[in-house]
Amino acid sequence: MIGMIRRILGVSGKYRGRIYGAMILSFLKGVLMKTPIIVTYFVVTAFIDGELTKTAALCGAIALVGSVVLQALFQYLADRLQSAAGYMIFADMRMKLGKHLRRLPMGYFTEGNIGKISSVLSTDMVFIEENCMSVLADMMSYLFSQGIMILFMFFFDWRLGMASLAVTACMAILGRAMMKNDLKHSGNRQQASEVQTQAVLDFTEGIGIIKTYNLLGEKSKELTDSFDTNCRVNLDFELSNRPYKLGVFLIYGIGTAAMLGLSAFLYAQGYMELKFFIGMLLCLFDLFIPIKSFYDQEARLTVMSACMDRIDALFAEPELDDSGTLILNDTAAPEIEYRNVSFAYDKNEVLKNISFKAEKGTMTALVGPSGGGKSTIASVLPRFWDVQSGEILLRGTDIRKIPLAVLMDNISMVFQRVYLFQDTVYNNIALGRPDATREEVIEAAKKARCCDFITELPEGFDTVIGEGGASLSGGQAQRLSIARCILKDSPIVILDEATASVDADNESYIQQAISELCKGKTLLVIAHRLNTIAHANNIIVIKDGQIAESGDHNSLMDKGGIYRSMVTKRAVGAGWRN
Ligand code: ADP
Ligand code: MG
Image 1 (cartoon, rainbow, N blue to C red):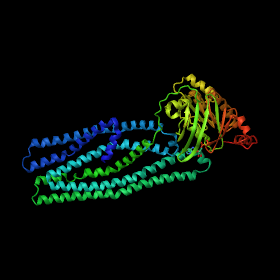
Image 2 (tube, rainbow, N blue to C red):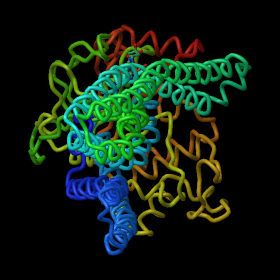
Image 3 (cartoon, rainbow, N blue to C red):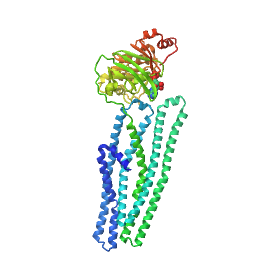
Image 4 (tube, helix red, strand yellow):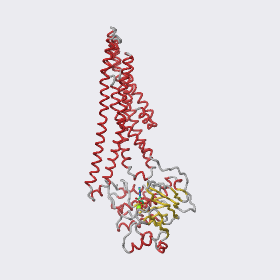
């Protein structure tokens, strides 16, 4: 519990003052909640002693009303302070997480972590935001109240004090065991919720494939299985928690009865005065309520703790190092140079000792069988992943020594798979360079041969595309992504099978768009059609993560190696795709 409070204070940053304020208010409210007992005690003892006056009774009544009003006021203020703090803390934390995610390597997003990210953002953070602050204050006030009740007992008789301490300790020991059990189960719960989120994402994203391959039954089963598991794990959690809850309830009941018995005994034996005995009776049914309520709420606290673990784990993912500060200057060094680059996805070594140079304004083509590592070579240039050995130089500077933002400004990429945001056509292009004027955006669209289809859209450039908006064909989307790159106008362009999945009609448009994009650029091209790269300055054949051969078209044809056999195979219609 203390650890949990520390953790929350740890993340509360500049809102810590609010939380402390709320705790003090909760403490005051906890004290005030005992006013009825105190007032009644004094009124009753004065009555027994025959000293009860009208004024005293009136004062007691005023104190009662006053305490209720003050309690309401403190509760209101504490709620305001802390629930607002909850939302503020998590608004800040989401921003921080966004920044952190931006700095993670691409690998993190492709390794099945999307479910984790969405459940942290949508489940864990929401749970803590909505629960944490109110639970925290309630729990604090329960602890204060329990302390006050024990003090009362000591005031009446030290033996009652000791007994109430013992009962509270028993409840605390059992409560701790319950907490441990809950913590163990809440890990499983969160994991099941993560799997469920991932399953829902997979199902909705792949619904097209699922339908065409008639996998609805099989994939729906995966989905329902994840729902079932989630339900079962949650039930297990509830069931495993029951015996502990019951135990706490029993100690509460037996402890209360024992306290009554003990005080009656002490009174009967003459160890305790009547007024103290009455005071004890007044407190009796409130005596262990705070600690019991504390453990009633405890499950929420442990869920919160597991949520915090997962949030912390996400923050602990190592970011790509972005400490580079070097400025890129124009030098005589090649625009791009790979020096002995080796790279493995996890333990699967994909690139082995790759070295090549690309001079400014030239075209380098990567060809070779599928799975050879061409896309990987392209992906390590914008640092989607960092290479494990060797280095990549941009104008003579190691790319890790350049700020990531500068590196990104220098590189544009066109992939086979295009991603368009659910936004207007205009904004989808403009994100290539957010400060571009409308004329520049339209010019880029023209160069990318987009204008014909954009003018046919219901609201032209202002048509919303993507989910719930107008949809574009694969080729149109590709041209839009090229317009984005033309607008960005970066000196290096990477084309990774940009025309691989478009129809012949679209291809000629895309080729025109690509030629516009490539004017005066340094190009790294992975192409599935060999004729588009025949005029490349350097053709590198990649096989099993290594450079098998390289040179221009003619020299490679003369050499009579893999490249030549690929070209001739294609010429006789064998069909070759990389
Ligand atoms: P190519 O573009 O030549 O077809 P890739 O660079 O895409 O080849 O892939 C090279 C190898 O790396 C393949 O064995 C592929 O399975 C593996 N690979 C590609 N991307 C990933 C990834 N994100 N995580 C793990 N392995 C990958
Ligand atoms: Mg590829």
